[in-house]
Length: 142
Image 1 (cartoon, rainbow, N blue to C red):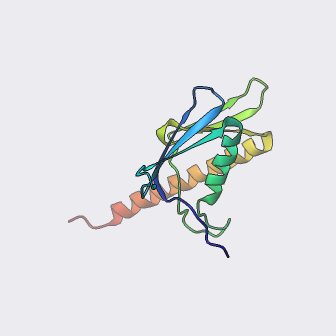
Image 2 (tube, helix red, strand yellow):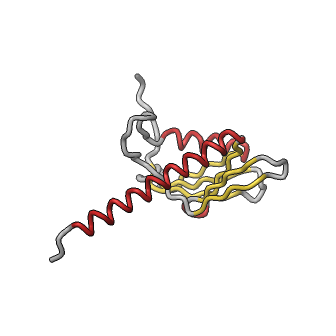
Image 3 (cartoon, rainbow, N blue to C red):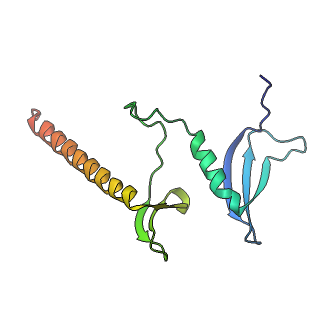
């Protein structure tokens, strides 16, 4: 297999370009290029951004579905909102670190499954909390 050539980076930020049609990605190289620069800049057309986001998410290691393993990478949600688009579609929006937001259009069946799954997860979370409280009460006090 041929060797893959890549530029190792240790930081990234992005911003929309002034043309409104392009996103600028600014990476920080681990080692400088031959001119001494640690900057690596890329420009991507806005329509390509969902594919870049999907490719990045796909690259994050995850266990096989149903494997019962701990998720190795879990992003914190700062906010979650459900709403309706102007066309009446159900939209789920998640706000992540640095204020980044991602929105998904979900159909009625997906929304119902989400509602049921969240209800089950909340029940399990409450049960865990109750078990932890009971265990703490049953421990001898010093």
